[in-house]
Image (cartoon, rainbow, N blue to C red):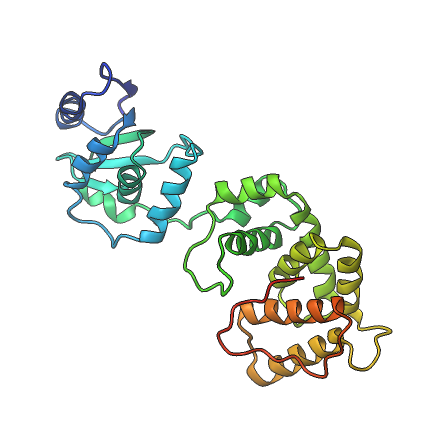
Length: 292
């Protein structure tokens, strides 16, 4: 890399900025890196040179837009990459997000790359929220990340959990900072799962988070009994829950995630209402009930 500079023009002058980029990258003997305040209009201009790239993923663009609009988009070393002719090799999702968010983003931009370098870009595995939490030495990182995703979806109003959208890592961290009790939810989920291994930890943790907000003492008791089924009278909703999950798993092998959460909510609501349940009944494709 021949240099790394901050590319600036007085105020925002799109033609001058574009001309500066073309001059730097077009005359460079090799690749060069610069930091630029990339405005939406310039991002739109660069997208005109996005002529050979992979299919656009709208959900990824939407994720980036939310982070940009929340002012949580950091300079992390990821760059918009252009070839020697100014064609976009990498960064189309970020460019589209800048346009949609209608906000400038300070970012690295690398030009002068050989066009054949595109075949080796983005070939690594993307870091997940669980990876980020692990790097931050978060206990039970995988379960915490899974619960964060489901809680975020719940708060977005997705009660069927069928949307192909989830929180970004930045949004997950913000949610964890706002609701640190999710860590406790993950602990309870793993403990319950160890005793009764038929419900995924993410469903147990999400349910605990929701129930704990209603009645912490009863939530603690409820999950102890989900785990061990001890001292429950015939017809108790938790016994119906344990029986239905065990039966469904034996017949189907795998149960939809939302059905797990629905079963937990139905049993919780019946327990809170002091109602017996001989069997849990759930209409197909129905949203998850609201805990009471």
